[in-house]
Image (cartoon, rainbow, N blue to C red; front, top):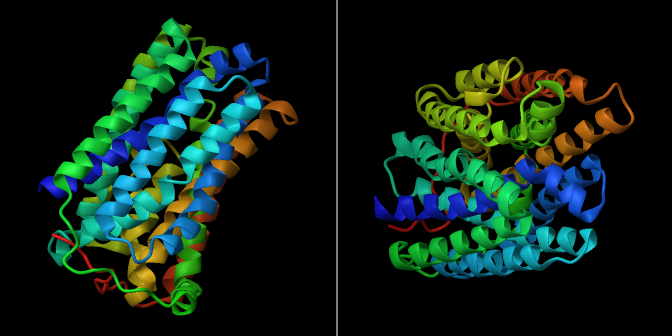
Length: 372
């Protein structure tokens, strides 16, 4: 339906700005005269901005109409990316990245709840995966094209292109997302926090953090890994990212279908594959883990839980980028990053098994005034 694909368009814009820097670490580090590991911290800074911004903006906008929240977030997104393109120093670029990141968590948190309200109950995980397809398509089209653009015309041109993507996404959201059925009621943040503090929810959030720390420990440094370790030329980075992104899209959609059939098996199976490979497994865990947290929060706590899980995803992003940087600068070196990254999904499997034991049900009760 149009509203669901409008959310996908917004997710695409946000996904491009989050991931495109990974293909431009070499260019950014050269122009701003910083190390590759320092450039990698631009990813950690963004991720931490998501982690902090998600609960804060969610609480601040709790009584706003959902459509107004989504459109307002895209306005900030456009301003933040323009600031990235104009940043004169590393510090300014970091600040602009953090500003942009503040919109990320709330967009995906609110968007995930809205998406589940647009489809029948047995299609909710698939609806989430469709929205997150915008994030994965960003890796298929946005990251390779942004990398190519930055290599040929400078990394600032890439952020100007992302700014344009944000403007298009803003127009699509304003045109296609319908108004709320009713004005959202103010939630009790204390009861919301109690819902999130439930053991299965906390373990689900921990699983998300650990799973995606493994993904981004490698993905953050994909360009130097390809050129410095695998021996590819700089010009080969964009085509390889294109193939990699295709695997992410396929895995994301497959993960949604698997979660609709059996949520627990989907979580454990995708994490096990993630410990061995990236590609399709990279985003196959997104929909299952999001559904787990939503189902275990229940009731009014779902909105905040959805945002916290998006924050957990990006906390894993930050930890992975940081851990990869430590391995490069202070550890055995760039070649060992994939081996260290594989440890995180194994820890995530352990957390998921404990979570399964802590809970016997995974039912979802709609809340947060879904729109249609």
